[in-house]
Amino acid sequence: MTDFSLPGPAESTLYLTVDSAHPLFIVGRNGTGKSALMHRLRQKPELNTIYLPGSRTALFDGESLSLTPKSRRDLADNLPAWDNSAKARWKNFSGNQRNEKAIHDLTAAEHQYINDCAKTIARNSDSSETAGAIAKLQSKESPLDRVNQVLQQANIPVQMLIADNELKATSGDNIFSYARMSDGERIALILIAEVIAAKPGVVFLIDEPELHLHRSIVVPLIATLIKSRLDCEFVISTHELDLPTSFAKSRVCIVRSVAWQTSGEVKHWDFDVVEQTDRLPEGLVTDILGSRRRVLFTEGAATSLDTPMYSVLFPKASIRPKGSCKDVQHAVIGIQSTTGLHHTEAFGLIDNDGMTEQAIIDFQAGSIYPLPFFSVESLYYDADVLAAVVKRQAATYESDEEKQADLMAGFLADIVVEGIGAAAKQGTAEHLAGRLAERRVRDALLAQMPKRDELVAAASSTIQISGQSAYPAELVRFQTMLAEQDIYGIIARYPVRHSGILGAIAKALKFQGRADYEAAAVARVTSDEALRKVLLLKLAPLSTIINA
Image (tube, rainbow, N blue to C red; front, side, top):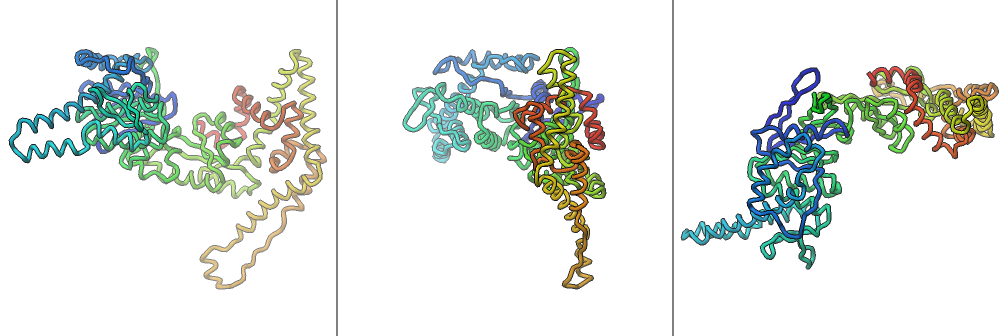
């Protein structure tokens, strides 16, 4: 077992533990300090470490080894100093020689294995020891045999052999130099060779093995390597979140952030350690391991409007689209029920869909916050967002400030004219009022549904549920908004995505369509701090809590 102590926030000390039964995976977003953490771990002088940088190339200087035993020893003497250098985080020291070292060590280990068996057979009169040495040669457990087993289990269609006293690759009937393998195959071979040829008790520090390998290869490759060296310890920094979950007994360090000193040295890290990944909620593991400490679940898919806008408004949270409102609820509850394992805070942000005030209160009690307007489209086409986009459009078309002001006034007037024109088209009022009324009626009827104990107590085959249609009043409200030309009220209250209103507004502002306008809206929110503050006020109390 190996323990590491590291500087944490507020002069605290954070600890990491790795042992042969519990590989340690280091995960986190780009820029949180994972590579710097790996660099610090290999600076523990008493450790027998082998560092495998993700930035290494898979190149060789020739098709045969140029590394001699002496140059191999010299390289081994220099590697610790190079790897401990501050420049090692961005400079590749002796990359090609490192690759040759891996091939050299594997070839030497294979020769040593065979020589040891041959010597036992040659010098021993004990038939049982001779038989044991012969069985060892036939066991398919030599270093090269083990390399080939890993290659096969990792779905890499090449095998290795010794030919003409050199390591060669073979595929089908072809035998060729390892230097002529594909980039991914060479990277895999170097990684496998380093691990298989290492002495017992080594701590492997593997930085981002997925950089040059497809996920269909890297997951079984690392899994097989770890299982093949139960006498060693593994620390693996990765963005491939399927890796930690491939090991029920793995530990996971979720790196949240890093603070730097003016000298360029690390001041401290902030991270959480998950001791038992198999106890994390099924289906939410990647959401937990790949997130900031706060995660915001939204409706929709990764391609929906939610993710780009909310990523700008809530930079301290990871945005995770989950599909339906029910899916958001399940995700929030799943993470909240296991917070002690991973220290991740979960929140939900869902469309309002015309829900009642009581429904909003009930959702907020579970850290799920309905929008203050019908849906995310209402946020994109909010009056303040539209005004900001209008200002930008005017500046794009006119350089003169007076003409810009006139153009802005014209755009704002066109928003009302074209938006109301689309809303007034035949059937639109009935359609939008009907959709909102449907939700209201459904909620009202569901609220009257008897509970199980009430059904048992009544013992009746008849259930009485009564209600009134919300449609007539909603239609009158919509028609009143039309008469008053309240386009912003219509956008806020109704499911306008199911109409031509938004497309008409986008074209009124000289965009090709909705997609172009919506991209411009996100750009304005990104660059305009005052606009962000206005929108965040509208999204309180969630914005206050999640951005604290």
